[in-house]
Image 1: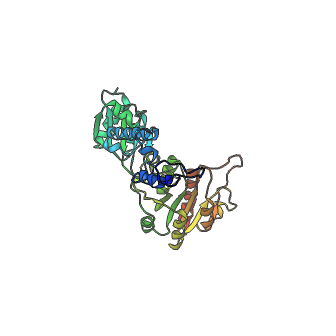
Image 2: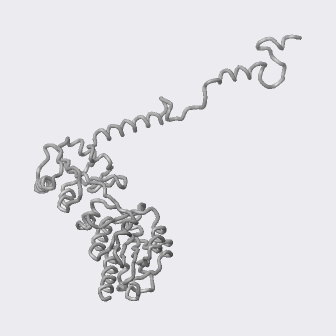
Image 3: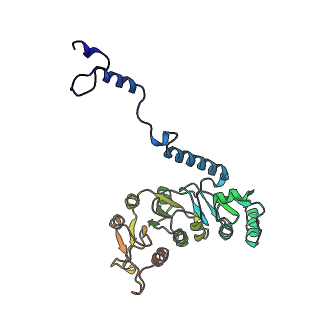
Length: 326
């Protein structure tokens, strides 16, 4: 019937598609609603509940930690935090050893009503002797920092790293610098620092990533040498090697696969940078290519390889002997 097409809800025969005016109505219904919120922003969504619970847990955990120990997230006898922010040492044996080695610390945290055995008693005496603040706290607070603390925690100062430039300026002719390419064991690091100090090296260079830092374990292994030996972290060892070459240093890498033996090295009396590879993989490919010379230490065929710190000690001793002869 003529004119029925203008009536609301009228049927247009068998023609497909929306009725007149529907598009406008849909548009008005959608106005102002914006994009769909993320799952974690919808109050009743499971993702939002998980996010809220995580934020609550993090807030409680932060509140419980003492100021000197907050940077650390340790859960073992010697926990590490983000590099450069310090760490904690927990457990009666570990704390006592650290205090005996005079590892730089900021605070000794002890649980109230702790069972004072010989280790705790000596730790308290050493802390008083070093003028270290001692703070008592609830057992729950200490266990929140480190569940295996045995009621005692030592907060360690962040290690103050030097720079390659400072080490280069400090070096006396003929310079001797030790560079580490991915040494990951802090005890090896500490032993290398101790050896470098013993043979007059100007400093030790290490990479920031995929390598051990100067933790409490490394400090103890250095037997105090870390207090007087400049140690630098670099972001790119290959670039640092290039800088060393510009400064007149001859770069020598240690690799057990090299055909050149240590006694064949003719540049021992020249300014040197000795590059030590990681415990398992040795020198990285790019590092090896950057070296002016790669040498090996002859060993019995039944022994696969030498520990990184031992190889460094043998090399520095041999270099020292050649320099003394000259």
